[in-house]
Length: 144
Image (cartoon, rainbow, N blue to C red; front, side, top):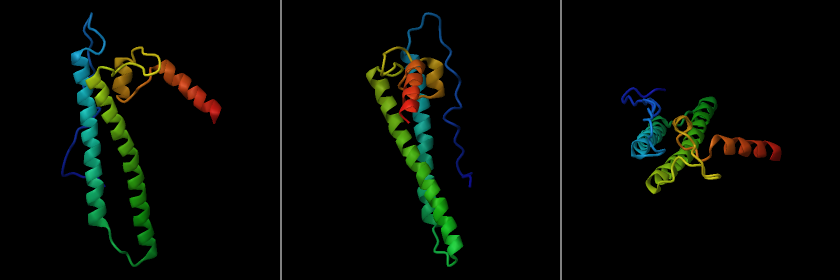
């Protein structure tokens, strides 16, 4: 059920960063660009958390019909699992914002090279460059 009382733009509805010739990687304008993306994304997720809490408080009913009660419990369970995944994502967003503050954002935590502007725009919480991520996924697949 959509909440029409508040229209929030997607956190990924942004203009892609246009690099300037000779611009240093992760300079102030780039960091600001990603900080805005991350903060907008976090705000949207927090709005969803609030919406879930209100929905569960307002729509909780003690249905006499066991099927209706089971359906409601199933819907609430699915919503809570989704919010739990989003809670973990908020933690990653907070970690990325701390990396921006410390000056480590945008660099691979494994090999130290640049992750890249476009990869970070696609996944702002990325901590590995594409090569290290690929190797990580291969290892994961081999381990089962």
